[in-house]
Amino acid sequence: MSMDYKISREEIEKLVNQVVLTANETVNLLGVTTQRLHVLVKQGRIVPIKVVDRVSLYFREDVEKLAEELGQLREKYRPYE
Image (cartoon, rainbow, N blue to C red; front, side, top):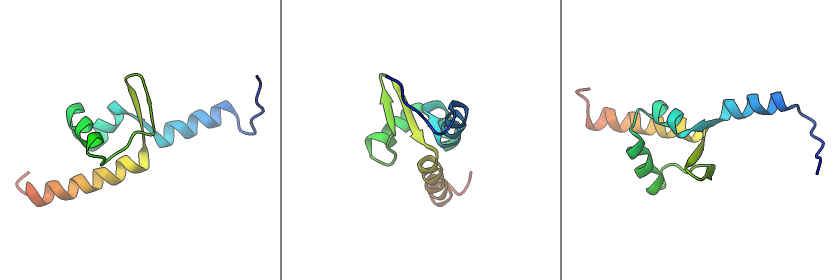
């Protein structure tokens, strides 16, 4: 089954790399542990856009928004850091 795409594979790869993050990239951007990321997912604070087996992918915009929220909470509750 062949599908005709108007954009190239390279353009799609570039777009995906810009807007999609792996769990490891998400953990690094949020500054949390993998365990904390799982808690945030269970709480519904962030939702993976795709889960395949043990691989979760996250939308960069959602991660950046959550990172800002977590940063504000850290400032409020841990001002000494």
